[in-house]
Length: 149
Figure 1: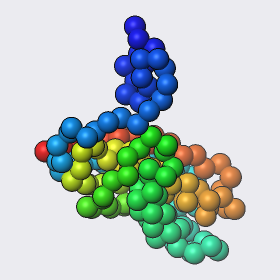
Figure 2: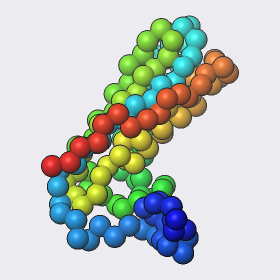
Figure 3: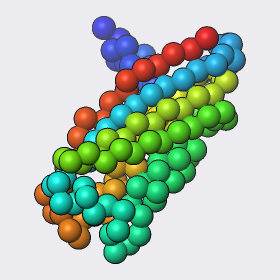
Figure 4: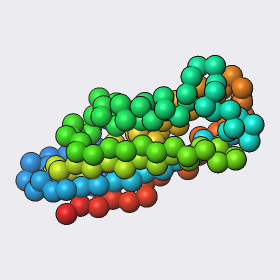
């Protein structure tokens, strides 16, 4: 098998490179990702009144900002014009569920932007609540959907 073993960002000699999407058509593309910050029920109930402010609104903005800067954070991602971006956070008894939906009309998909939005939103919730709950965990960050056309 070649040195890249099918990896899209590795050439036959094993060197990394940005994938050439120049010949691909501009298409409407959408990705949905999710993740969760598990925490105690007590922490979940106090999220909107933590000493640092509204953790959910702050995490939502952080996720949006991160998705817009994915190509600066992940070295081989293409910078993309995002046409739609939504980050939703829902508090349940055992934590916060995060879902990011990202769309573009471009030559490559937006799954990395959706995953980045969820990851940074989760990190922000964690950061804002860590003073009251040291046992939190960030879990199950994954791509739920990727579509084009």
